[in-house]
Length: 154
Length: 154
Length: 154
Figure 1 (cartoon, chains in turn orange, cyan, blue):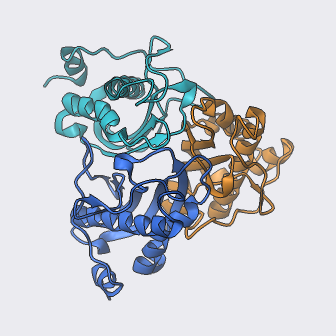
Figure 2: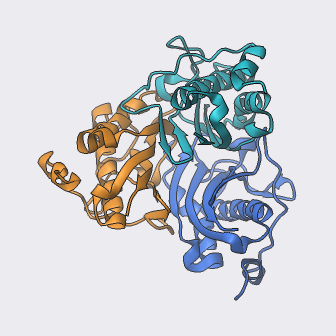
C-alpha cells in the first residue's frame, strides 16, 4: 500500500517544514483519538505565498492555491505530531476562513483547493465535513486560513 | 414518548431533504459519539431563502427565520446520518455565522432563531453551547450559516 | 501544589462571576472528557469593558486586555462547570475572534493577551492549539470573543 507521503510526492508536492506558530500557542493538541490542529496559513519557507483579499488582490484560482498550501502546512503539523500521515484515520472538520471584502460569497470555491487535494491524497479517507466563511482579515494579511480537526490512531 | 419528528410536525415544520454540499466535502463525519456536521445554509428545495447582509438586506426577524431554516437543514443531515433524530443525545457546540456589514452586533438575536427552535424541539436536551459572530460573507451570499457538533448514540 | 485559583490571585486576577449567556444557549456542554465552552466576551460586572473595532477604536494593547478578560470569563464558566480549575487537564482549541475593520491583520497579537495568561496560569498545561481571525462584528459590539474547547477530568 502506497503511503500518503509517497502519494504526495507522486502528485508533485513536498511537505513543507511544520510552520512556526504566529503567536503564543502550539501547532497541535491531542485528546485520545482527536487531534486539533492550530490555524494554518499559506506559508512556504517562512514566507506567506498569498496575502490580501481573495476576489480583489488574489483571484479565486490563486485563493485555491493558497488553500492547498495551507493544507500542506496542516499535514506537516500532523506528520510532526504523529510521525506519519498514515496514522490519520479520518478528517472530521475543516474550517476554512477566506479573507474577502464585505459580501465575498465564493469561499466554497476557494476552500475546494484544499478539499480536493485532501481527496486526491487520501481518497475516501480524505472526505471531511467543512464550514467555509469569508472574514474581515487574517493573521499577517494572509488570504486563507484553515483549521482542521481529525481522528488519529497510534 | 413523542419522537422529535412528531414534535417537528406538531410545530408545523418538515425536514427538508438533506442539502447537497456546496463544495468538495461531505455533510457529516462521525468519530465515536461525536457527530460533526458541515456548515449549513438557509436552503429549501435547492434554493437559498435568505441572501444578503442581515441588518441591511434582511431584517433581524428575517435573519432569525434564516437561522431556523439552517437548523432544519442541519437536522436533515443528522437524520440522514443517524436514521432518527431521537439518536441525538445532546448538542455540544453551535457555531453561528451571520453575514453582516462591518460593525454588525446583533448576531446573538439572529442565531436565537435556531437556538429557540432547538429548545422547542428537544426541550432540555436541546440546550447547547454556542458562539455567534458576524462575518464578511457567506457561501452563495447566504445570510446565515450554522455549524453544529453533537453527541449521538447508536 | 499551588491551585490555579491561588495562582490567579497571585497574578492579581480574580475570577468574575460566570457570565450570563447573551442568547438562548448555555455556558458549557460536556461530552465525556471534552468540555465545550460558549463564546465569551470581555465582560466584568455585567458590562463590556471593550467595544468597537480593535486597531480603530481600541489599540492592540487594549485588545489584548479584552482578550485577557474574555479568558477570565471562560475560566469562570469552567470553574462553575467543574467545581475547580484544577480539573482542567489540557486546553485543546482556542478560537479567537477579533472585531476589526476589513484587512485587520493583527488578530494573533490581540489573542496573545489570552494565550499568554493561559501559559502564566497553567504553565505547560496551558499550551493550546489556536485559530485567530478578524470578523466583521461581535455580539453587543464587543472587541474580542473567545471560544474554548478543553479536556477535563472528574
